[in-house]
Length: 247
Image (cartoon, rainbow, N blue to C red; front, top):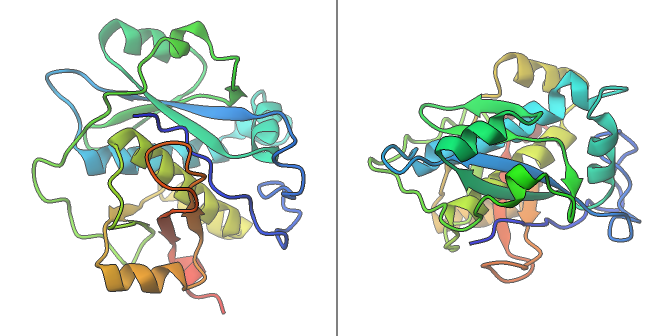
């Protein structure tokens, strides 16, 4: 299924930090999308949790890349994207399709076995032909073995235990959660996370723990409801140690 998800705008109290633009005109601004492509070979697909972690790290890598900042070559596209909704679309590729995708400007991030390539934002109707023809559907993945217990001493992206989402949609949601955490961190906290290689865990909490997380003050992704789930559904809570310590 489609994974072009749009979280709610930031609250009106958002700061003037360049990573957190004022939300007033988000819906009126031209809309862009951050493309992500997951390598999905028929005979060797990655585990679902590995793909989720890798997609989140790919988003963080794009956000922090020098080409995305200041006068970098991708900075204008990043600003245009962040001034609207932080929309992401996950597509899949294999074989020659993957090789063609890798020839386009972007960044490939690897996990244990997963490979995800993230590209600078493009207009909703302006996808490069090499990416536009890639399939959105079919990103069904599972975990052959039970995924590791999330490391609560580090960043954790907690997934709503009551929702049933495709792997592609969940990858996009994990990316949203990582981005909301990034926006909340100070410059020093961002630098420390980046220099550590963006470690993070993905987990599904018990129902009671999920309820506590959603009212804890941590960043929460709320889906716009265009695909798969109802509008306003809370999909991810971004639980970063630096954010837990704040009053």
